[in-house]
Length: 252
Image (cartoon, rainbow, N blue to C red; front, top):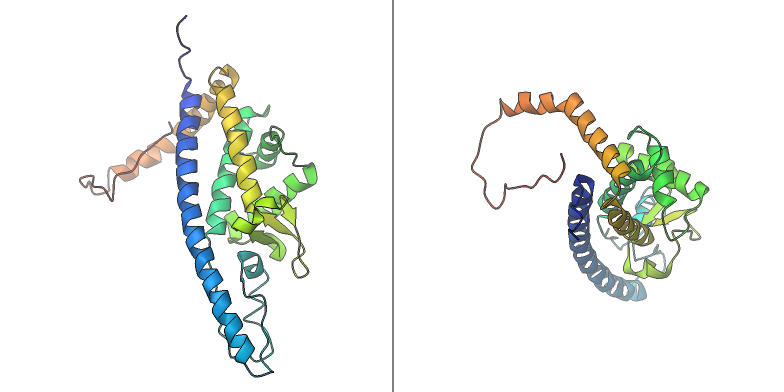
């Protein structure tokens, strides 16, 4: 019996898995280097605190992006300090936006609705397929507080926290601390999104309904925007591809 020919949507999702996993692995390596630097800084800061005058106060030394969302509370402290707090950047926000883009498009492809711009429905459809339960209240927070916040104003709305750290592996999707009312655990979100993506990809190989929705999405893109690309392409300078300029298109 002849092997089933992969659909265009399954090819698209296969490429997505390759690129998402590759990018996330690079992200993790960067985060690991930052965590190592953070540990070294914490050790040296503890030495400074031990020998410092009594008026010096210190907030948590393992400064995270969850604390960044609290309006730089360390820098805004009214108490004097001789210790310069160093911020550590784990590209938490770019990682989270990447994961949300997967949720958005896959939610449309597997959902029963017909418009890809209906993000609320996309999120609900996607997380309905997750092996790890994400309830409706959590889905609303993910979309309206985190996704909309990161996309439109770069930070989560209302000073909600967001954290990507190896220590988070055992934590639930959402948790809180004494100083931060709600924190999104991006490590857990990553696990949910990637496992759900892989499950949807397996289904897509023979799913003609998903293929039809994918075709409709691409056709709408072409109708609305292809002429804009062609007009600008006619004006821009052509350059010879090099290792630093070559890119890959995986859709349409």
